[in-house]
Image (tube, rainbow, N blue to C red):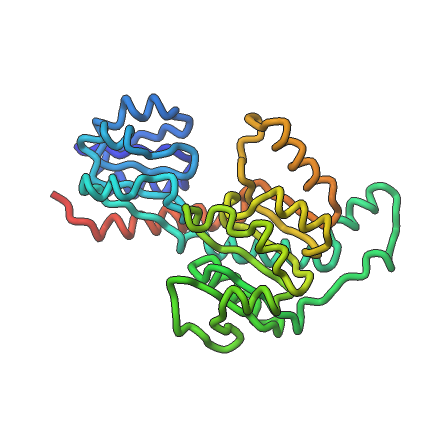
Length: 311
């Protein structure tokens, strides 16, 4: 019987589905990199999230591996080129949690625009400041979306009832203007957007995409959102932009380094600088982690697995 390993927390339907497809399934949510390297030779299938890097060293030991399933979207944790060279099929499931990410981005944005989170904190401190917390309506604003994949598209669709204009840029898509969504350039977004939301994978091209030059080029004072990958944003540059008033507020679901226990003094200082600001909300990479998305991620991978040829 072929074996499959699940290395992350997953909906029970994933293990059940794999067993129904003839696999012996081992769930090892806390497996270390070294343990995976030692055990991987015996497995035909591997399910990962974002915790363990599937690099050349791991793949060199994967003598029986035929497929890797990624719970989520970003494939930067997998050396896809090497896997492909070894005829290992790599699958992701961005369709599984895009609705959750879109809703989270909308929640961050509305909270920032209407001072919901910051004013709640003030009330806890015994402050009842109405005029100081007068917010802004989303209606009539221009929202720039950089990266119109699954999550960017989900966010764009949720914005429809608010009567906004969406300027969307995607380097790998053209001809997608429809309704309130207008195909645009990054320059268009920098020039006109009241809100900018990032929905990009992390790679050499997008590392620190939002850097000092990006922020200094902004023509308006937009609300800034990132629920994609932390490395897309240069944290130091964002802090500088906040200090200079180049952005009105920031909603971040991801950080450059999400292992807080490993932080250097500089990283700790930057995080504290973010957290002490009333116009910044940081959440712990939960945008795509709704109860519903957990099941959809599993179901997405199972459907893709069914398309693969079986011996």
